[in-house]
Image 1 (cartoon, one colour):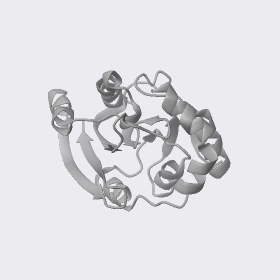
Image 2 (tube, helix red, strand yellow):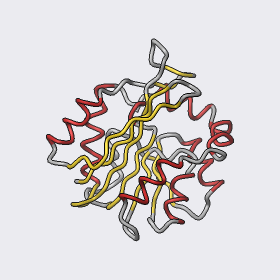
Image 3 (cartoon, helix red, strand yellow):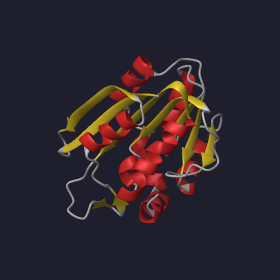
Image 4 (tube, helix red, strand yellow):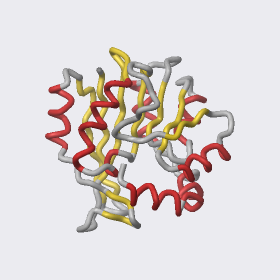
Length: 195
């Protein structure tokens, strides 16, 4: 994980928590309901304040949240004390054993990794999935020339190369869509993978 990004999240955790607790990622929740397998072990990797971890658990996807920022995890534990959260980070995710989850959500995380870490991170996401498991990833770019916003890295990800990586891993791409966030003129990519 990019250290400057972790520091930025640590320093701004309260403001991010205030903002994210008011946002509802409707499209992401639609995709979860469409593709995830109910009642099966789930992980929210890059869980931030734990909003999606809690939503997953409440909707019948028993979930743990994993994040690289201690301060974001502090917010998560305060807001959702009934949920389980772990401090770990991509690309390694050393604290989690292989084939542990049927469902993995990795939303707004991959773009915070340096380019050299993106595909090792994806390899580890697949490692954590059980056979026939589902992986939902969401990420965006930035309009900033240095790929940074408020200290956070937004590494560009080539969608064609990204898709090819998963095909080469013998994983099936169930959905590959892009949507424009008009207010900020940003493109979000949603990808659903079946191992």
